[in-house]
Image (cartoon, rainbow, N blue to C red; front, top):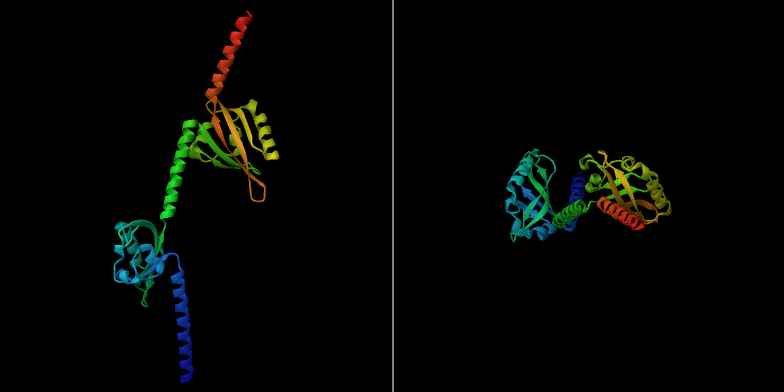
Length: 282
């Protein structure tokens, strides 16, 4: 019986060693930084990615409080309170400090470790450098702001709609203003949009677009739109077909520009020329 017990203990010990080795391999290979902290918030050990991201070696970080990494102490205090209560997984996006005092944008995730009695015994911290993502988001925001301002100044809206269903999938704020819709009210339906087309231009516009869909070609045309207050605008619309990898027509994207002033000027010029020709005939 003793030999059988010793064999079971040996098997269990070997199993634990394998599991520990596998876990260590996973931690070492992880692209995100992982560190173990004691209940007093001092570091115990970390994986290679943590060393690479934060600039602290496992030896250097051991015994140091997490405050050496964190810049915004109010954010950390709120997160630490949850961890101290044993609350489950928590995540924040914040700024962290490297060993060389430089800062970077990071996603910090923490989960409490439970002692045998059930009280928090520390926590695991996972750090991901999201600086590239933040820069990309900021560049996108700036680009969208520039585009919106350019559209506002040039009175040009942008749109996209599904080629099969005609459901509008993109509708810029300036597009809403062009056709008298509230930008805060969301995207109108295709029917609501076409309902703003001048009745005398509606059929011609519909035939033009239907032909472009059938022939899967670009289109460009002028038409009039009537706003809810009765104002009539001249619109120059341009559309372009978009295909998927299989060559199927997916959607049309394009722009709409307010060309009312140009049209009015052309009409005035034509009227003036007509009057001059009439005067010469007389």
